[in-house]
Length: 298
Image 1 (cartoon, rainbow, N blue to C red):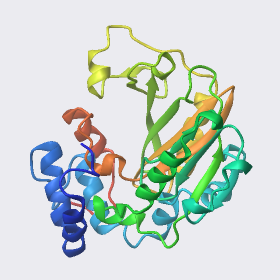
Image 2 (tube, rainbow, N blue to C red):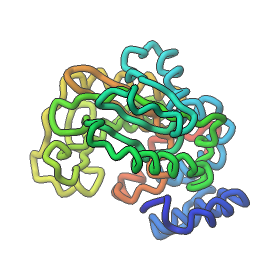
Image 3 (cartoon, one colour):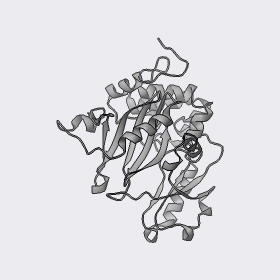
Image 4 (spheres, one colour):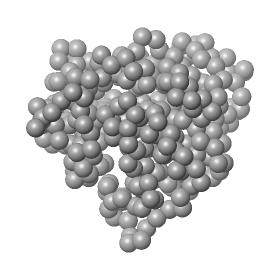
């Protein structure tokens, strides 16, 4: 479900301004074909919706860590400055970019919301006009209103230019997404297949590197299926736990290339909390691992 197109974006801005709960109920129905239980949430997506309404808005640390620029200070404060990607430049608007000063390879991304990155692997082939249009369009999206994600209501928009992480194979670095529940990194979601130029596949693994059939692709995998465990994966689990410690739930994203770990981002509401790729029973399992702050629904 593309949250930027269905239903009308301006209607959703207005609806969220009037009542974030209206937006949540509408998008949840579109995704899961049922109304979310916000009085006694059970699944992960339901608990994410609850936290969007009752926890994220006034939590300064959540807002800092949802900000892709300010989160760097949080990573530094946790003694992990060595895994931060090198920043080449920062801007307040796309018109400030001096393309001639940028290296041949780089990544441009806004510090709020999700998606909309410009990944350049050869500046000579980059369509700069198209990149500018995309960055301008994305910079205008009000993500805190689009899917009622108040953590993206940031004080200052920043356009970040980072060093491109050279992959060992393919054109893009492999990302590892750690599902962390109350400070415990339980699973990592691995994306494979990008290096072959095919549609990527996603598989969950636990800390013992056993396949967990938690999504549709994992459920359909043949008996005994696995992928090689990357060197440094155990360390990534430790990093994920260190950074996720204060939060009921967060997804901590990293890259691991040429034996070096890189921090990606902290995501508090993956897919806006409307993830239809996860199996319903997995959504319930994940939800059972989240202890909501200061609440006992039983």
